[in-house]
Length: 324
Image (cartoon, rainbow, N blue to C red; front, side, top):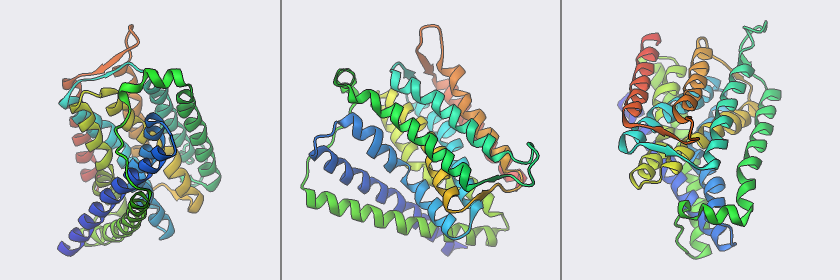
């Protein structure tokens, strides 16, 4: 078991370093081609921060492990919303003012709801709860719509100039070095994804837990580390919009893009009880709206509310352990 834990940690390390190098290399090349910082943040960085979940799911799908693929995304979304935003709010109260985030929050809620409905086949008269290839294609199509409505406003130079203070600082570097970083990042993602899937399956067997339990907890928390760390750092620096936008965007990416692509490769069968986890992920995402809306059309997730979010995640972990 000790050896499998070392392999799992090595996989997480490879994933996080790989995603970081991929984002830095791709961002530098995008900057060299004259793309704006905001555009890069909403595309390259957003895709890169979700790369760990994507790598794990692709290997899980290719290896015929739908439980790991499903548990990784649902568990990651719960960790992002409850743990990520909770910890970030404890660092600094998260205030939302900008329209980009206001578009993303309803999209995240809608994506979680659509995903739950697609998976809830048995309550609707089906034989088993499964995310089919056709539904996977539907999620990817929905993701393209989300991406269009997210990126379209920044094509307007006036809008972009107003958002300038929230853009990213991307240092210039030689193209050759950027390409090496991209290649190295991809290698790290591939290696890390394979190590995590294999070690998670082995740990589940050794510990007597299901693959679903391991993926909902250990794997999901590990692949969520880049988003959680980035949001806590953004909150520390006072960029609360970015702290929230990073998490909300990642949740939408996970539900639509990652599970959509996974289902296209291998239909994702929901393990027994998994529909409860999918509903809890939807409920946690929907919980953002009442916390973030008030009459002034701004919102704040306070420190004490952040504590409640973290406690909610701890409670979920306790429920998952009790369920086994």
